[in-house]
Structures are given as structure tokens and as C-alpha cells.
Amino acid sequence: MTNTAQERIAFLRGLNATRAFRPDPVPDAAIEDILNVARWSGSASNVQPWEFLVIRNRETLQKLAAISPNVRHAANAPLGIVLVMTGDPDKVTHETYDEGRLSERIMLAAEAHGLGSCIGWFRPETMAAAKQALGIPENRLVRTEISIGYPDEEAQRARQKPAQARKPLSEIVHEERYRG
Image 1 (tube, one colour):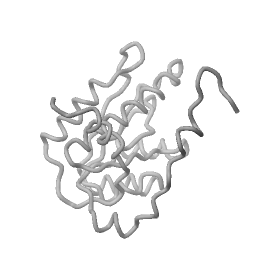
Image 2 (cartoon, rainbow, N blue to C red):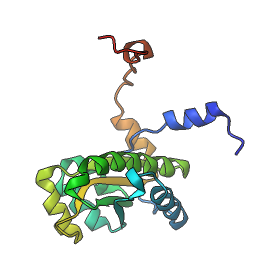
Image 3 (cartoon, rainbow, N blue to C red):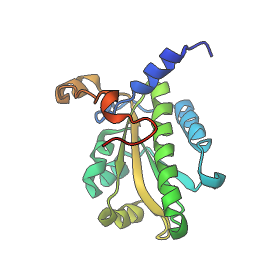
Image 4 (cartoon, rainbow, N blue to C red):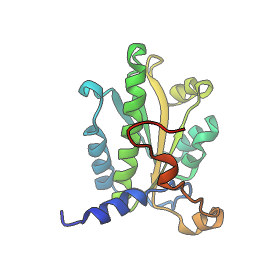
């Protein structure tokens, strides 16, 4: 790979949430790459406590959007990936950490293909409805849906808010000891 560290850092910093998608389908090769990146994500003790539910059906994606306001972006996405975690009550902390790592890697893999993505979640009060809609067993944990597709640049610009400045490192970085 000939990318410089600065190019790689720019790629990582450039990941933004996409909430408006064009209707174009996501190519199968891109989906396969994204899923392979996901399956190679690290997990506590390499347990890999996940399965992936790939959803292309517009009606199903719209149903998920109706179940949870935090998944509204799925309604116009050509692809959704729902993370199905084992839901082992003894490992919920580890799985939560793993799920976050996994989500970010899926989004970065989508970005590498020029695709936009947005993460959404099912709140505890909407999880059962999401599982039922998707045929997921009760003993599994379903919190995360990631919508993926080509960004609708025009729609993104129309809803764009002024850029929020990031806090300077001097306000958020502590060295050796926390200084409040």
C-alpha cells in the first residue's frame, strides 16, 4: 500500500454519517468486502460474538425505520446490516465493546468503497419488535443497524448544519495524571 500515514489519517477523519442515500444498489463485491472486514474485526478472547443480517428489501428497511426513530435513515438506504450479538448475559460488557469496534470497521469498509453509512440503534423498548420483524431469536441481542449506500449529495447538503468545531486537544488530552 502506497498511502502515506497522512492519507490514511485523512481517510479515518473523513468518516461522516450519511443519512440520505441514492437508490442505487450496493455492489455485491462491496458487500462481501464489508462483511469480510467485519468478520476479521477483533473481539474479546476472539469469541466473535456476532452474526450479520444483511437486508436489501426496501419494505423491511422501512419497517425497521418505523420501529425505532434511531434507525430512520434505514428507510431510504439500499442496504442495512443488523448486528446480531450472542446476548450472553455474562459477557454483555465485552460484547458491547466488541459491537462498537465492529460497527466502526463496517462503516470504514463502506467508506473505502465510496459508500456512505449511518449507525442506528434499537432502544431497549424497540428491540423485541426489531427481533420479531427480522425473525431473530429472543435470546439474541439486537441493538445496532448500519445503513449503507451511495450518498445523496444533494439531500445531504440540504440538511447540512454548520460544522461544529472539535474541541482542541489541549482541552481533552491529559498526560500522566488526569487534571480536572
